[in-house]
Image (cartoon, rainbow, N blue to C red):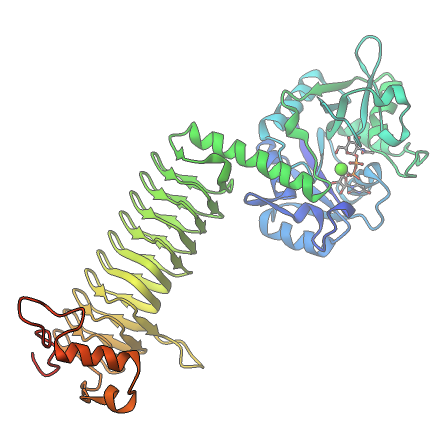
Length: 494
Ligand code: UD1
Ligand code: CA
């Protein structure tokens, strides 16, 4: 196989983004712009990938170290044009042979197939250079492809250097090229800066090669959306919507149901199992996986979260959580990192979990915070429970055993343990361990002070209501018994 080198141009500032973040680092459904471009070249199995950096070089270099550690970065101190950028790259690399593929760092919709087709066409023809072109409705701002009467490529002219007649051409330069290394270096040396921008244009290499009688091919992209660039945030939003449609279409044809694709955003890094259902207004990000037959949404955001088979997450926000098979979450749940929910467990309405393990079938149904806790299998946590995990200095862990039943409105002040099969009474603040099978209670006995309202709040609506109730003539009076205090109202009755 031919030796291949990939050079990605990413030194530009991206002025029109009006951002402190270098343009190529802006995110788009799971990868940065340059991350998408690099992913599209992965199948080329290039011997070397170089990224030309300049503006925001430190940020771009740090990002590449994370997402493409094998790539070399080459710094272009002054941005004197795309031709200059490639010249700087060649100067920094060992002598090249074979095919040199050059791409812009800001065309994230470029597909691997398109890059592979361009390179295959180029290598099969043995051309000196091959450029990917596209026929577009609005060529504004892009380089135009000028062809000779016989259809062969003559040259590429930038819009600002073009005549009116040349501007009428709708076949544009995508910025993706394959070069024969033997021709590229020498021609880069012949570039001048005699153009409107005073820059060395890489596009001129193709014109020079054609003029020298070398074979220069233009390969037209079957789908023009592949080569859409990103220069401002409006274009970025447009590219994101197109990428969303592309990703969603791929899942819809792979056995996944999306109830409202227009409001469903799935990163390219996410995976979904067969018969998974994604409801409206749902975002699946990062290393998220949704298991077969699971249902997520509506109004759900999952970041780096693994969802088991046949689980259901409704109106849930989860980050770094692991949700087992057949688990039920929400509506209105917040799963934070380290939440591990065992098979068939439940995290219900208005519940927040963090660094918390629920055993199989364990339930936290309502209004609770579960932080730094281990809850055993088939245990039920009462409504409005707080795992008090932080003493203002350090975090502590609470362990609740299996088949335990804790009362409503409990505080578990960590570190504390509740044994297997233990109960706790409603309203308890549990600060000491509860042995297996015991009932933990920690609350003052109730005391009723009779007649307090009549004495201390006379003349109020409450006092009037109490009078009527005691006289047996209030609206609650039961005609069958002639009124009087309701049964069971005696606080000492058990
Ligand atoms: C370039 C092409 C144009 C094509 C368009 C496609 C040239 C002269 N023009 O125009 O024909 O239609 O791409 O999007 O090549 N860069 C550097 N160093 C530099 C200059 C640019 O690394 O000194 C990088 C930029 O970061 C960017 C890429 O090269 O990723 C393209 O540069 P840009 O200035 O956007 O070129 P265009 O004017 O869009
Ligand atoms: Ca551009």
